[in-house]
Length: 339
Image (cartoon, rainbow, N blue to C red; front, side):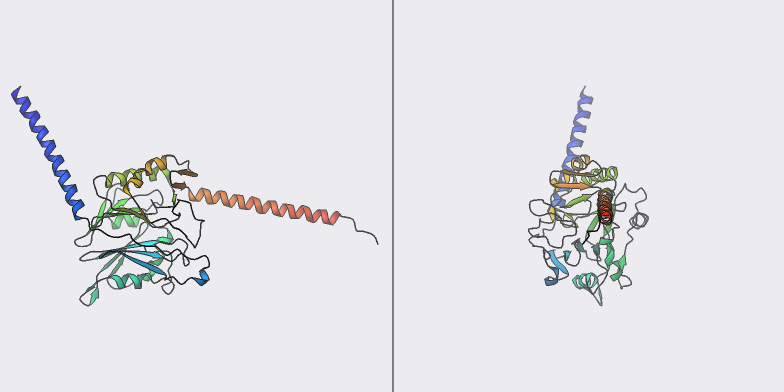
């Protein structure tokens, strides 16, 4: 009996020690988080873009080694957000935005201007993507061939190979920037090649189009549900300061702006919380595969909705043509009035 009690006490002590160590590790990680500021009013675009005087890129310094860039809504109604994370040995740019023309949208020039000098050259830069949609990678061409710059692939096979994720979408990867580590979590569902990034320095979870204040566009519901579970499991034991997507498509009352709107008056803040993210599985579970609203969020299958709109537009056009043809025939049959 004594031996059993000793064994039981030993097991309890081991569990308690493990919980204490885990708690201490979590607290240490939380204490190491570098605070930043989201005290920024993003440029809202303009009701008449011909009179717009806002810069093509708005730059916000979140903290000394982290920048958030927002593309001008008048130049691209997507209004993409880009993220620049600077380490001791390398910098990381997440997404390059929706415009290739450097004269119109100087992404590369702006980013390189923010990098610290290392001797005779700028700090090396790695360019990655949240996913393969063109509005997140059209600016890649501005970085092509630049010294000290590496542009990662954006297709599924390229992402798997670059981040060494052979069991995609399972597994995780890390990017070492020197004194700063960024985790890479596969998150297909909005797009087959989608990934989410977690910055251990700031506690920022960068979710691309997977989760944002706006339309949650779902390409594959089951993949999206699995990704939601994967991302939430990842952040369970980690501090999350803010969840930052790459678009804002709603006002402060969570009302959607029209698709393609170049003016966002009274725009909602970019930052969401960890608690917001935890609602995602229930939001996706309520999705009917076409269009649904759950809480603040609107979930839709973009391809199906656009297909339905195209069919509706075609039906309307055919009805107009048929009506005009009927009217023309009636006019032809109307007898001429004699003098």
